[in-house]
Length: 444
Image: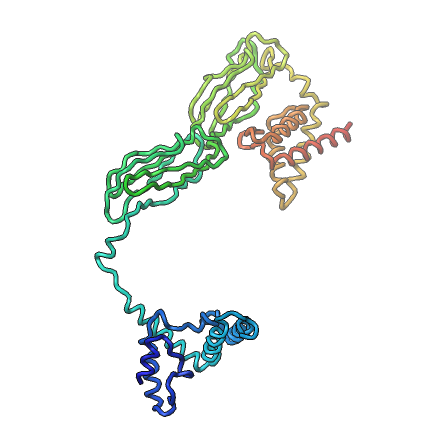
């Protein structure tokens, strides 16, 4: 019995298979196991042997891995191969470890005892007390740790809040500084256990389409320095979009000496913000009711005065609309006659009405289609507008202007009120123009 206890104190207690008792078979099995387990629990932690470390394997390793590790180490430390002074002792340790870990029954008993030792050490560990917790060092905490402003339009500002505090309820004394002038702070002084600071970024002087990075630095007297990264992506500022209708002002016939003719131009904003701009005329006979405006829905009167114009001539001019949402040109036309019963101009002759006949025939063909496609429906709308507004011989010219307007559709051009010259309308106009040319060639 004393020999067992002495082995425990020296840390030399082996597993049950190599129990250091001369005649352990003479003891009852229950006494043998109980004595062994108590001695293992009494063994000093520093002297307990870890067979897994000796074999250099994980406690969850498979039996094949354990065998392979044993063979590898045995080949390395066998006294016949390794001439080191501790080779023989290492080999004894390997044999002893493999005798336990290599046997499933002994390994199971060893694992159970090993886990019991771990629980015993954990329960014996000293618990935290008031005095031990008070020994922790106060640190500065920042919430959030990174200020990401995301996307901000150029010229705009955005504000985020950040909370700066110190643990252990200590008072934080220090200063705040930023790395760039486009970062602004609501305060630069700290004198409290917790402070909320508003951080604002101003993108007025920053380049568009780039991510700009900055730094907020916290300099405290007692707790060191802490940095907070700041990032913002500057995007293009949202601009108003100029929309003006109609694109052509046809004043018709005007008699010299009578009152001027007036038509309306509707100007609206198709985008965000506030629309403002000016409208000017480059011809003396063409003027407007107001030369500038500010608003998203405006109606301006265009005035055509035939006074001083030659009878029998057709005049054409332009109104230049310039705004913060783009630029647009409105074409104005007027026919000057001597009286209202004047003979129709040459453009209305039977020879020049072939294009109108083509439009009527094409409209009749489209109306007979039971299930028209989207392009056919758009073509009917265009033909109906041309029949109402065009004179004989003007259809081809009008289509050409419309095609040019549709190709530059970003300028918000309009064929007529409610008929925008978009990219979707371009194939319809092009196809109609080609059909008209083939018709004119055939009729000629």
